[in-house]
Each structure stands twice: as structure tokens, then as C-alpha cells.
Amino acid sequence: MPGVFSVYKRYLSRLNLKIIPIPGPEEIKKNSGQIADKDIPVLVSTIQSKADFLVTGDKKHFEKLKVPGNYPLKIITPSEFLERVLPQIIKEIQTVKAS
Image (tube, rainbow, N blue to C red; front, side, top):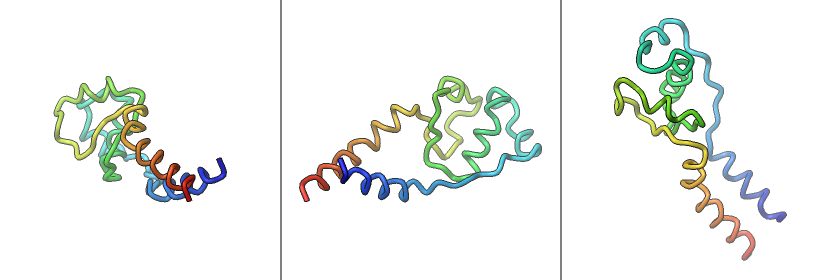
């Protein structure tokens, strides 16, 4: 599958990966009580980065947000994320194979 690597490289650049600093005590304190304390830095970092998705295997904890719907992102599992992007990736791979 030599053509798959080129598809991988194309999609990796589309992910727009960034290193987001850990939020400071002030930001964490503002969101205290919204979710389990251990998850607050992840939630705050995700919001500050303006991410479209928070991909987590711990979705059940994030679904317990005290103020659901106030966050500009979708909280999904890794498998849900793949369900969204995999069809596009498979289509690209098929296009590369056909070339």
C-alpha cells in the first residue's frame, strides 16, 4: 500500500495539530464544578484551542457537564471520530489506487 502514505501525509497536515499550554489556576477555577476536577484542564485547553472536537475515551465524564451546550465543540469517542473521517480517507485511498 505505498499510496497510503501520501494520503496519511495529506490528512496529517489537515489536522492542524497544536501544542496547547496547560491552563492556569484562574482558568481552572472558573470552570470548577462543571465537571470532575481531573477533567477540567482538558476541557479548558480544548475550549481555548477552539477545537471542533474533543476526542476522548472518557466521554461519559464529559457528558455530565453542568452546563451542556455552552461549549463550541463536539465531545466524541475515538471510534465516533473515525466514523466521521474514515469515509473521506478511504475515498482518498481508492483515488490514489485508481491513479
